[in-house]
Image (cartoon, rainbow, N blue to C red; front, top):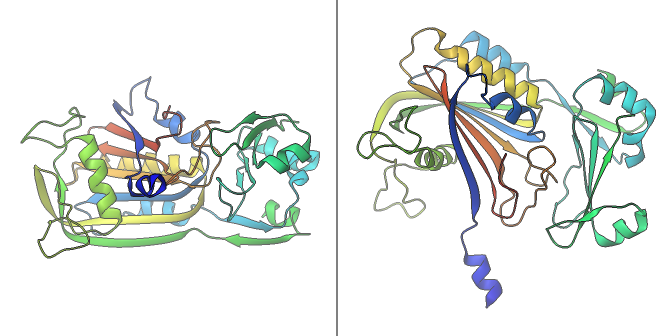
Length: 321
């Protein structure tokens, strides 16, 4: 019965919201993007937009490839040749594919040269290495520094495949959008919606849920928070793959420039989701799957360069930075 009750519980999560301006010296936006390493989905939503600008379209199409390497021995990632070829020359991220963080052995390579291993008990004891217990399922986490067209040739002796990120676009018609004010993170009754209300609304939009709470709808009873306004059309673009932080930074900067010329849209959003089975979320903070495996962030970019930043993780993860 206790197990059944736990399954019925709604998964909890931690959500941190803050506001700032991209022009402020102490703005944290760049650091928080750069330290969220393993990203698999990026979405941006632009109200009152039917056609993407040439600059944004080119940037989306130039996100760049990522690679699958099958049956790669772990020692390859700590060889001096690999370190000299990739790690010391810039950002290099890697993550084991098709593994479950709460069941399987998982490895992640961070851009700072750290190799994170999340191992089950038997593998940990056989390795003879020193680590510390995970907060999830009694696993062991170990951290090692490996500070001491090229990818395809380097791993030519293994099964390697180049993949391009998948890009999907859609134009949402007559979309009901919450009214937002950049200076009012908590919202004001009958004047503007809060960051939390916007966060829930975005989830419904990405899930293609109806927003009008119709009585005959047995799938979703959600409705758009109030006050709201209806926009004739909104542009939604989603990129799925293995997306590096520096590519996301370029996209964020380009979205900031979207308001260089007057636009009907008062704000746009950029949402980033991390791999559910990554052993870390931000920096080297341990991440577990639990019931959802979420670790994600969202920017709401206003036309005066103010922004909201929302960061969410599962309830058992460390609080987002």
